[in-house]
Amino acid sequence: MTLLTPPASVEIVEVAPRDGFQSIRDPLPTADKQRCIEALVDAGITRLEIGSFVSPRAIPQMADTGELIAAFADRPSLRLSALVPNLKGAELALEHGIREVVYVISVSESHNRGNVRRSVDESLEDLGRVIERLRQTEGTRLRLDLGTCFDCPYEATIGWQQVDRVLGQAIHLADGLPMEVALCDTTGRATPYQVADHFTRLRERHAREGLAWAFHGHDTFGMGVANALFAIHHGATAVDSACAGLGGCPFAPGATGNTATEDLLYALQGGGVATGIDLPSLLEAADRIAALPGGQTASHLRQVPRERVS
Ligand code: COA
Ligand code: ZN
Image (tube, rainbow, N blue to C red; front, side, top):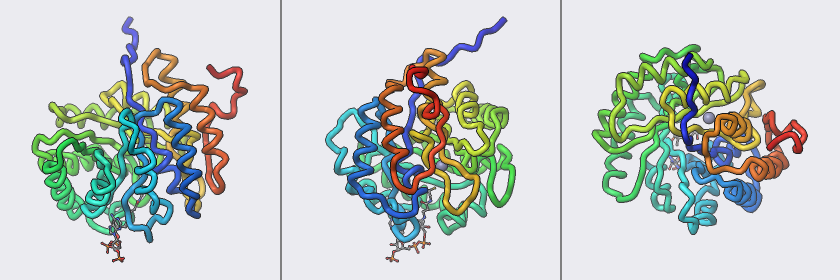
């Protein structure tokens, strides 16, 4: 009999301030966002995607990312990152003191065009420029978010070979620069076996020193926690999630947010996996986030009587 051994620790990357807040159409007051982030930090969150540097016309909700970074800049234990779609975004992020740039490319052509208005090859070209910029700036890190790795709203199921092509080129461009690659289930439609398959095949082909693996999942089909666990058991050392399961899109019925951080934490705690996060405090942060006007949340643990959760 072989028992499944949980890893000693996993890094949770809290993405509610980016993937969650961006789903709320009307810009929230910065002070409200700040209070939510404060609660997340109090709960022990240390990796936080605090926002994005994108066109404020594309996503007005993210326009105050610089202010939020300034509000948390004095916390040395906090590893803040920001998502960018192009070199301009990376430069803005660095100017605002961000040391971890999350560069996003969807592996499906149609989704990349819809999201960042250019082809996958054009995004890769710009990634080359971002990499050069980061090489020149000491103390910076690169996270590559590969969107639609499992399913695309326009092209349906995505095979690992399609991811392989984009990932192979990105690794070639990085040329040894350390990088964390997140395979992203943008639509929340992946299944655990598909996640295991992609991680196994891609790591077999590309594993190398300086390359870390992560998973970014949504819970639309209820697979979020299971997918994250399969990713962890097939090589991911970091997983993205959003407190309260905040997210979804007011224009896409049925779409939900990222896997709820508290649901994932509960699963990990069951295996004795260390994350540094305190569950009761995280649930307080989830209540604060759920009270934001205009947000959709989806968390199992928030529905359970508190005295049953510990
Ligand atoms: N940050 C802030 N502003 C930016 C920017 C960035 N990273 N990139 C471009 N802009 C500005 C340009 O300066 C220009 O401003 P102007 O009209 O005042 O001169 C405007 O946005 C349009 O620039 P352009 O290069 O023509 O971009 P575009 O209109 O083709 O849009 C993106 C491309 C990538 C900027 C836009 O689609 C975008 O921001 N998408 C982000 C989508 C996203 O965040 N999705 C969710 C996360 S995965
Ligand atoms: Zn997402």
